Length: 557
Image (cartoon, rainbow, N blue to C red; front, side, top):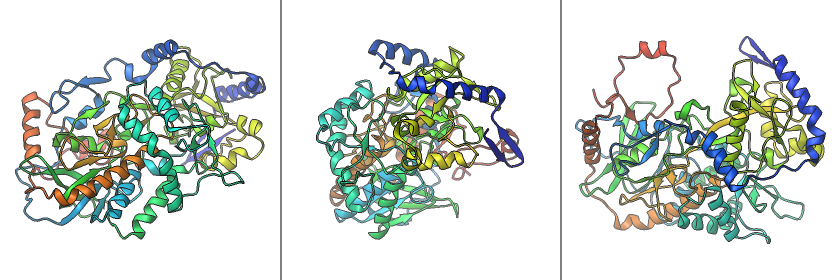
């Protein structure tokens, strides 16, 4: 029986949960003999339309202003995109430039770090600013692996077909082609920088399947893949002497009279002071938006993932793509409730762990695409009432992790998924011996700023890379392609921005685009209570918010 000490409260499995765990154990041997068929296209379509959160009525609305006026957008993303700036453009003094650089990179995750290294190698002066510490990002939290078609039985063309199929053939083909073509060189580059991927005794890469893949092309570093990649990139940025400014998020972009991006305004979160950064080219790599908790879902994302890049880029005139869809990862933690939504890597299912309901029955092929598996879990809990209720009122299904050692051999789980073992061991749960309860959790921002193959936007001198970009994955991303895309398009944006810098000095910095956007918001009747970027999520209770209701947004005073 799992027992968790939360402050002075002991959390234990309920009697119902324990009975269900016993049923899972009883059915385990028989399930190991079963093969579960893949969904037919028409079956998958029905499943998604009926149970995927994207299709739930009222989850999206039409934009009232801006380049995508009239297009659908997820409500929570719409709230930050159609919002007033945190600063009053009429009162901001832009005459004193704090920093001048060739390339300004906004964001300190994998996309930002790879862009910085690429631009620096091209000879550009680079400044990287980040909201929290350098490396605090979704990159650091990624676990399962990174895709690259570098085995004899695979090819970028096969990888391309998998990516397109995973996105429901809605992806932008040129971006997918770039993604898969660059993939093998990305692995080679990471190895050159010192990243340590899992290998066989003969030195060849260990690769495995992910959901929706037709070949084993997932490269991993145990289940610390993102952390290993981020460690490697961060060390190299520091070793190269690239200037990094921490705890200083961008709160507004700067444009000149012609609408070209010429830098950004940073907020020092420690001193509450502004810094004006003038840059010849700017790369936004601010990551995703999980901390907006779309539709009330928990999230796998890091604390700073609040969709800042979308708000800043849209105000500056950037077009968006696929912002009406969110990826919900099938296996977020449902128990203990203390870590609700935390990621349980898809690698566990790749290794053989099965999804089963309260009666120990398997109900989906675990290596379907993420949107299908998440929808199947929601169906099992909501329509079939086959979910397991937790003491705190959450619901989920079991991920039968003990199967991994049963199939792969003793010690396999600990060797290949040490992070998962330790994550639950803190709460007295041994995933080698007992299953874990899971439910869908907000994981990835499928859409974002529309880019081309070099990360360029429709706003001159402004680039976007990483999760803040849209179009690569269409309406659903496959496992292992996010760590890939941040590096592919981060490097490409860095190279192109550095090459463009000498001929892109830009004019005098202004906030004309903010003034124009505010007028559009006012004309459309948008709420003046909304400001973005929100920078950090607000988890205060209502009482605390009432006590601070007199707070005014700095810059409007």
